[in-house]
Amino acid sequence: MTNRMFGNSQILAWLQYYSDNTQIDLEKVKILDITRKNKNLIPTVESNDAVLVFTEAGHADIFYRMWSAGLGECDVWYNTGSEPSGPIEHSKLKNMIDRGINASAAMLVLNPNARSTYKIGMHNTSFSRGSIRYVGSEIRAVILNKMHMASDDTVCIISGESIAVEAALIAGEGTVIAVEYNGNDRRTMEENIEQFGLNNIAIIDHVDDESMKELPVPSLAMLVASASMEQEITCLLRLNPHMEFVIYTLDFRCAAALPDLFAKLGIGETEVIQITVSRMNAKHNFEAEPAPWLITGRGGV
Picture (cartoon, rainbow, N blue to C red):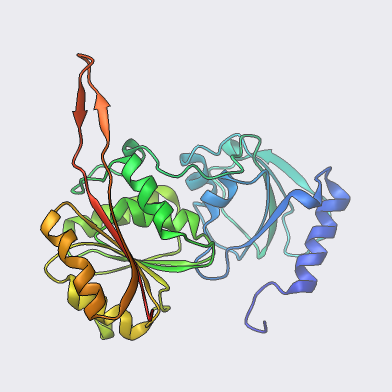
């Protein structure tokens, strides 16, 4: 608690200040302290009617980034000092894009177009165009469903770029460790992080004890099957013997072999499913997309 810039007394004082000076219903306010690690401002504002944002001085482009994300119609209530007192000011966010934060304080952001629920399985056009060939949105939705993430989970995603982005949105209070072996894919992943305003994704270029030692221990891992998969799973199990796994593969032989590999590594509760998606084309014919296998299991069973 002592390391936090904003303690409970300060948070309560700012809540009282905005309660006295605005018509906001405090029951609807989401509190977000972006001075703390891994806090996602843009997704939080997108999904909440009212967000009380605690921030330190700096952030020269904070309003420009929010405007670029489509939040220009938000109302921002603020004062010009670092204490919850004095006159309050109000402006549309779109009129503040050339401003930064000049003091450690709290601002109240009201979003009239907030979506209170997150839509799983975003369309692929939402993601950065680059070197990555994204999995279909319907299949991604099933993968995310199989992952059963909580808002504060730590998740490791290996070569699953769009999965990592959506996982970071779902686990907004947690951490996503995105493993990208390819340099071009890492750059595209960084573009997605910038585009979605995500601060809770850590990118690494391989999985071993050294690369993982400074990161929080995952409770869940999603892997695209590869030649290094057994080594990756073994390393993750050393970190957390009760790790839950979701494996994606288009190779039937790999899918058929994974239950034996899981048993060898002490992973139980194994389930294997296949997903098939067909789309109607312009000629009103159905075209089948690649049908992946998903293999799930949990360590220490």
